[in-house]
Amino acid sequence: MTDFNGISTRITRALDLSQPPVAISLIDSISPDDRKWTGPAPAGCRFWQEGMQGGFVTDARDHDSCAIGIHTHNLEGTAATDADLAQALGVFAELTYVRKEDIAQIPAISRRARFVKYEPLADCGAAPDVALLFVRANQALIVTEAAQQIDGGATPALGRPACAVVPQAANLGRAALSLGCCGAREYLDVLSDEVAIFAIPGPKLEAFAERIEALAKANRVLIRFHDIRKRQVASNENPSVSDTLAAMQSESAAPRA
Image (cartoon, rainbow, N blue to C red):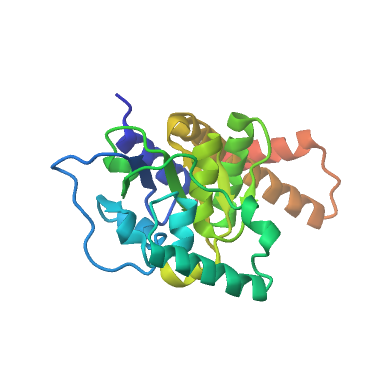
């Protein structure tokens, strides 16, 4: 059995995350132990933040406040949510925010599930469909490097809507970065201006944890290298790689005050 608590801890420590990874699972049935969401939510993306605190299950009607999220998650709509979606798209078109030709480019979950479960990755008993990391640019750098090695190519960076990053990663089985959207940035306190969202497919979480740990360590070493090299150049030196490596070794061997 995969240790998702261990994976969550490893990723969090390696990246020094401020928020714990949150897991999203698309499911068709719930167990007696699953807690059902109660209360309002301004949009489905708000469940990401709530899911960091503890697990719960939502159905389509819990997502009714955001017709866009119902669309991206392929949840069963109603006449009211269909009308909301049409009206929202009409406003977006007037603003040229989402033009008619843009709609087909917005990812949507390829299968319909009855429920969406949100929980801390650390609490998962089975692989989720997607895990979300809330990352700053320097943290996203490391996850992107891991994705390039694991997925074998460049990681897509998505804009609006933020929730489209879930189907992007779930459908293709490849990591994806979301820069968020103006709505998500209003609804989520954890999505501050310097933070973006990285979605990792559940089946690849173990591989990502291993690569993130290794690449975070490598980045720490290389940051020292570049810091020393910057100082050498500022001192009018013309260092070779060997010169800078030697200076690194010398600094490491020097006794600390």
